[in-house]
Length: 429
Image 1 (spheres, rainbow, N blue to C red):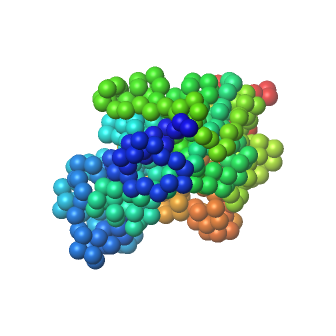
Image 2: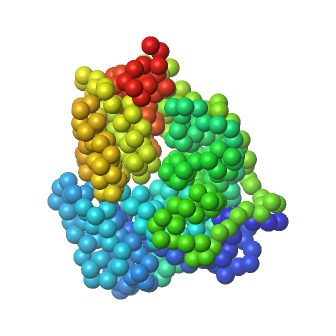
């Protein structure tokens, strides 16, 4: 029996010629990603046990992003802990406030991580990096401590779900809609502890931003990670960041690899999708219910990239955010913020009545910069809509693509982005 991409990566990192799902194995980790929320707990575990060291300061990337700039004294202390540890241990890759942004999006652009490698972090959306053909996953603080100390992590080899997406994507439909459609079909635990491997001619035509959105949300289906095989699109993306072929290992799944589940998606039939409260699998077609919104939020590691902001600007240009709607746009990184400014997107946002915030996780997890109050109704391009995720537990969160968020902000209710043309007219006119 052959192996999948993920099985091959984990076999190579555990010294085995062959691994099978369910097998327990200790793997080396090429990279450890640290931020200011989960890392301090891991560091305390090491300090309390007299194990206060790092396995390799050149293989740890530290990026404060969840609650920065600090929203209160507690957040300031956590940031201070990470920053002092970075200095004390000589961590070589530190992207401080003002030089970084949301960790996963910063990391994908650094030119550090490569196909065929392993990455762990104390953050569930570490699976984002799987779009680069690597095994990337979130772990708890105890495993994070072990990775920092020894550069090794125990894994149970996960089973793999093959998601085959074929056909042309309709205008107005985005990769976010595709992943929400998949999660709707399989359920929020449909890929429990599985790798979600994305294939098909639709995936082949996606740019890297779209692929990152797909792998980012593997965890919303219960997945261990998501992954996309390396192709010319990946190679070009890496080359632009100084990583040339020959400096990394490309793995492909064997023709006789074993898949636990195979899902087929006809991309031409996917419509703009909105996940209703309070679970990402509660998907419905955008605009079927004209639900009034009080907040519209664009950002996060899922959808705060430049392409996402361009989608928003295309709809907002020449239009205004509806009265009574608070719209917040959060570029994922400083570099994206700067590029958006250079392209004139910021001016479009401000002219439309949207507020632009600094790069951070912010309101995605209800920490700051747009926290929801009682009975607020928010349409958001983030990844989770659990009760209390973005603030008050009575608030309602609807997940959607940035285009759908922008259309809804203009309409004042959940709207179909296909109804809005780039010239400022409505498609139905």
